[in-house]
Length: 214
Figure 1 (cartoon, rainbow, N blue to C red):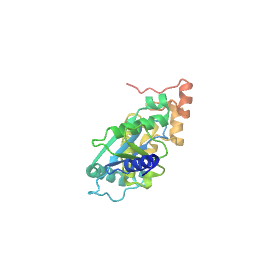
Figure 2: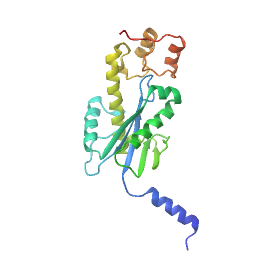
Figure 3: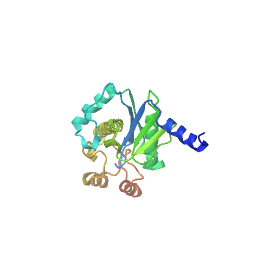
Figure 4: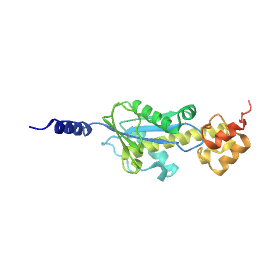
């Protein structure tokens, strides 16, 4: 007769390895000084494989755009979500990232039995989840999620550039480059900047905030 302890361990293993849909989750935009943090969740279709999936940062912008369209066309389902600048400033970037990840998973049309998340932190979910360090280089579904999140956020930056061209969002995508930091000194911060991030906070502390002309 098997011990109670053994039966419990066996049950946990069976639940963890239960067959079903697996979603990959990744984010884009934790480090920039401006804009939302974006997360994506993807459930790939084994019957429609996608060649060339990789960490989005290792792909050219053109290749990312191609894969973005292919993922959206071939995946069983996907969802893209975000946490706003206000949520980042209120809760901190880590918590905002986990919020965006949770929203992406909840937004999936199909419910996965397991979620694989890039990194070492997990959002609160109602399904089994596993954090995988460098998962965007190891798990195709996470790679696909990284591509969706990256392209979505980069396109947001392109749109914001039309409104605030002086900051150069189309080039640095919100990161703290020398050009961006100099623009902050000259023009102050826009409504899209994260006030809790040090280079931006110093601008607001000086009570110098840029306002576009009507």
